[in-house]
Length: 258
Image (tube, rainbow, N blue to C red):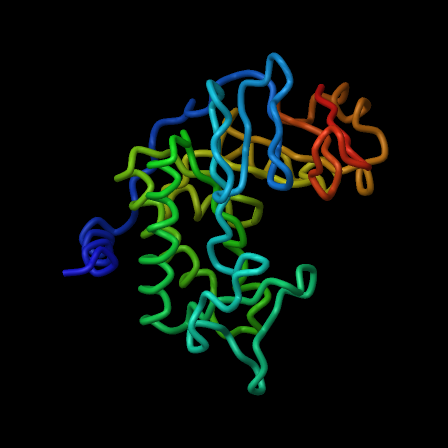
C-alpha cells in the first residue's frame, strides 16, 4: 500500500492528527530568508528558508513549502489533471500569477498532493531542517467554490501526519481565520503569519497557538514597525523584512526586529 493510502487510513481511524505540545519554537530572534539565503546575523535563533535551500548551520531552521499551489517555476512539474481549471483555463492566484491552484476537489489529486508534498517534507527532514511551514492552506478561498475548507483541512492533516512521522513540527502559514481548525483538526504545532500587525490578526494566531507564532511584517504595509513593537501586540518572534526577501548585499534589503 502506498504512503498516501496508509496516511488516509490513519487519519480516517484517528479522526484527525493529534496536535503536538506547545512550546515547539525556541525563543530568540527570527530571520525570514525565502528569497536569497545568507549567513544569519549573530544572535539569530530561528531561520526560515525555501525547501530548495540548505538549513542554516547551528540555528533552528524551518523549511518552507508551497503546499496547495504550484511553486513559481514548477508548474510543468505537475500533471495537467492536478491543476484546477475554470472554463478550460488553469486557475492562478491573482496575487501570485506564477502560482496555479491544485485541484483538491479530486480525491486522486489530494492523494497526489499528499504523496508529492509529503516527499518534500521528508526531504526537509533528511536535509537537517528542524521544522516545516506549509503555505497556501487557504487556496480554497481562491478556487471559486470548486473545493472548500474541509478539503483543505483534511489534506493538511495528512501532510501534518507525514511531518510528525519524520520528526518535524509543522507551522500553519497564514490563514488566520482558519487557525483553530488547522490547529485542532489538522494538528499544526505553530503559526507563521505575514502582516498580522498590518491586518490586525496577531491575536487570532495567539489565541490558538499561544507564544508559538512567528510574524513577518513588510514596510510597504506597516508604516511604523517600532511603534508596533512598543504596542505589545506583536508576537515575540516578529521581524520586518523587505517584500522580496533579498540578501544584505542586494538592493532593498530590510531587516529589523523588536
